[in-house]
Image (cartoon, rainbow, N blue to C red; front, side, top):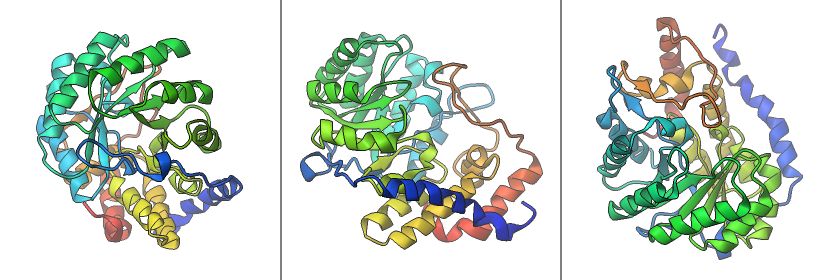
Length: 338
């Protein structure tokens, strides 16, 4: 960036989003006025980033880096981590790699919740049930799944009923494509262990009041899409978001300040989050710059299609990497907890 005084101006573009949210009614999204918790007492509220799947130059999972990712989030007091989902390249994982990655995350003791994604290629429910049982046996806090593309409401409900019956763990659903609010309401009514929807189908802000009303507050609403509209979502009662990992501690700071009624400080933290994420290549390099991932690691990505990670390709030149590090030092340090 040629003029660093312009660095935070990008946050001004967010004002229109906040103004739009202000016209919507604030709704309570906690079930029965209480926040759902895992069997280990960890609350499903706050920031739950989607974990990366770092690999060594030979393509093998970097299990140390996967574990380091959770330790980093724990240092930042981030509420939890979800792995593997779309940003994790879940479609590329063999059963062995899924188990190794899950074990690496769960090897880090304490800290936030671990939610394991259990969908499998082809959405074979028997394979997902095996993953769900393994997650419960190893001490995960919850499980999550996408819905199968093109599935009917009845097929979706049956799939999640079987996941719910497979373990005692709370369930999360990732709503994508054109999944209707009415389908989510039917699913919530049919599967009592369903506690959270990560809503990326349509406009999550305008869908939220209908989801809350239709489920009587039983289904907590989390957003995705990198957390880019989280402040507006907080204004209508969202309880969580699922961004990328690298700035999850800053977004958690925003959430905590907002819940403490320190909304001006929360807005300022969110403005810094937005501004940093506007830097080309920032998400691809920030965990290297913050000392979590080795420089030579690469990230797994899904093949093109429904589950492909939609991020513009940016060449990470030496100059761009240096700029990202400089911005972290010049602007972000007061907001970094990890």
